[in-house]
Amino acid sequence: MNKAMDRIKNGIITENPTFVQILGMCPTLAVTTSAINGLGMGLSTTVILIMSNLMISALRNVIPNRVRIPAYIVIVASFVTIVDFLLQAFLPELSESLGGYIKLIVVNCIILGRAEAYASKNPVVPSIFDGVGMGLGFTVGLTAIGLVRELIGAGSVFGFAIPGYEPIGIFVKSPGAFIVLAFLIAFLNFRKMKKKKSNTSDTVCRMEDCMHCGNTSCGGKFFDFDGDTDVVGHVGKKEEKKEMEENANE
Amino acid sequence: MTELKKISSSPHVRQEDSTASIMLDVVIALLPASIMGVYNFGISAFLLIVICMASCVASEWAFEYFSKRKITISDFSAVVTGILLALNLPPSLPWWMAVLGSVFAIIVVKQLFGGIGQNFMNPALAARCFLLLSFTMSMTNFTYDAVTTATPLAMLKAGESVDLLRMFMGSTAGTIGETSTAALLIGGAYLLFKRVIDIRIPLSYIGTFGICILIYALASGRGWDWSFVAAHLCGGGLMLGAIFMATDYVTSPITAKGRWIYGVLLGGLTFVLRSPWNSGTAAEGVSYAILCGNLLVPIIERFTAPKCFGKGAVKHE
Image 1 (cartoon, rainbow over the protein chains, first blue to last red):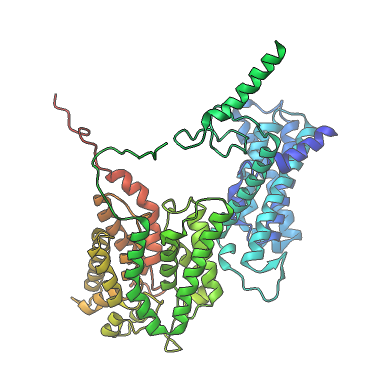
Image 2: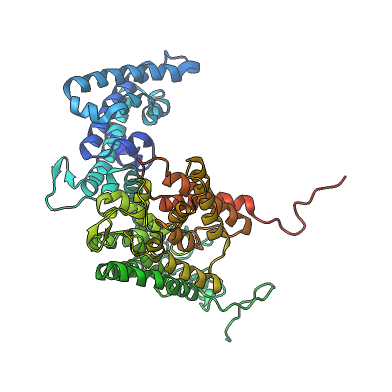
């Protein structure tokens, strides 16, 4: 069970297909004009991803290595057709607004990527949870982008209009998709960097360069050779300490 | 310890110009067009110019202050962006849209790509297109004397006749800064005199566009219709774009040959985007032409870079 939770966490956070792996950009940019579109697209992909991971993992010892990609495509395409027909029958509105992008899930690189990287090498149960995690990660990404674009660009949340707000139309057009995606990735990277920095705070400057150094108290003065900073003092403290220790040992 | 002097390699050219002095020259050159805009469109135009300038400077200061960078508001580049953006807006635009455009220009287009000298497209034009895509109704609502009227270019497209003298002086509908060709030419002459801009880009841009329009006039059976050509040259944002936007240091080529290519490219693109033969498309194309040109600048520079001394000679066996 622990392994299953690990796969799900990996899909949603550590290797989020939208924000970390930057996979499946075509549906990400094209269908996220509203939160409900993003959610619908994400969940359809999740269902197909789980089913295809299951099938490919079960058949992983039967599929010949040389024709594995066509075999994967056939499996994925079957599930895409099923989901497409189900959507047309039960959710015709969503099916209409997603248009051809449901059919394009066949060539979605997240699905082929997971088949190639995970399902074809791992047993059935972990593969299913891998599909769940990746699918949910994709759903979270698409819904977040859709939510922001719909909120700013159309002035509504899941179709409920906010009164007295003039929408900024560019955000539901294609340039808005790029802007919102870039801002969300930048925001997540910023948080990740902050977390990293607080975890590994060096007390002494590293010798390589300031980029990989966690010592924030130095303020970049260590490599400021032509400046007026007393460079030696910084290294000196460390050496003094060593000397003092050595003296104490003697 | 005594102050360290920086030593550079020869030639030791003494140059008094700084970013601030050049930008100040551009501000002075924009004054005639701004004054004509305020004269034509009244207090609302004046307020828009002030709002754009103030919000550009404020957003530049805020971004640099909160991201702990060097504050660069004293080099006037944000002021120039603000004025240029305001001159590209219709006078009846609500003030908060102007503020939004200024914030987009400075923060998204300029600062997020690294601040002054790093932006890959003209901030003012990018903001104008941002507003045009977002608030199409407000951005294409041109009023003159409090009456909503078609711009001269739209009238030309519809086949109506236009008053050339009024277009030259600027008493027509349009954005704040684009209507008065005379004022823009005065500003351009000042910049050329002070050697802030180079004649190559405006000349090749306007020249190419004029030739394209002349060919179109001949092909469409108008004959040598010089007034049609002149109306197209004076109409829309062509003069404002060719003199002030296409010559932006950051987003135009630095090589002499590249500047000719860039100008010709912009002229052709503007002609295609304006497409006088197709009444269904937008009447204006200067903004998008310059933005497309901006994107091609790195390629132009790559192929027009001068050869180093001693390199590139043909080897004789």
